Image (cartoon, rainbow, N blue to C red):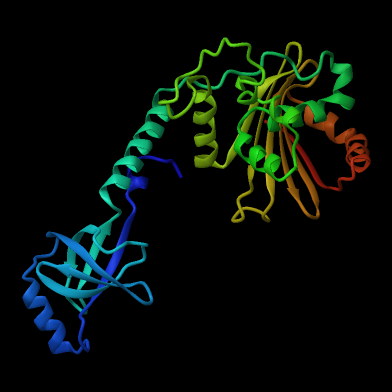
Length: 310
């Protein structure tokens, strides 16, 4: 879900209970005493704490028991909106104004990052130096490119805190490379008043995109001159069994354009290949045994292989 100002509106419902036995006629008298119209703004002054999330509060000059799912203290004043008195008195409340302003400001900052921050640039270096190295090195280099690109930096910090990662590994990521541990007094980042270092804004933008879409994307050179696009996300359970789905696009010297859709489940992998050039699908099917053997060597079971020209 995209983070914006609307998400920051932390609205909670408070069900107001009268201090006496809540019979129907008492409830009607309480409503008459309030003399409020739906949508009218009121203030609730907390008088005392009671057990079970109940508070004694003064609303519009009358005392009520309020059931409040927040930790508030006597003397605090809450801004509320009167909703209805039927079947019982109900208010709608926002968090204290100081918190609301802070959340709203942060939400606006996130919206500005999504709108204005530059896109994350593609990797400068190919994953491997030569196509002959692809079979042995490409998988490891691609894994490092996906996991050390800064998008999971906060998760890696949490792993480091419990001993799961070393500082050396953290310093390999873009945010780690900005660490004072590696600088020599030439810090060009923002001051303490900034929410985040301006050099990390493209990363934050991409993190928000990842949270919003659930799709991890990588684009760059597999080896010099060989462009590759990869997207990874959760599969659609309405179309096939739940699992991970990856889409890979390549423009190969002999085969031409090839798009591969891989679906990973606990039972194995299904591969669907679409070739831009006519006749290439037949070639791939004829050599499917080599692909199946390669999967088996990696401990993967190839459940299905389909290839078509299109």
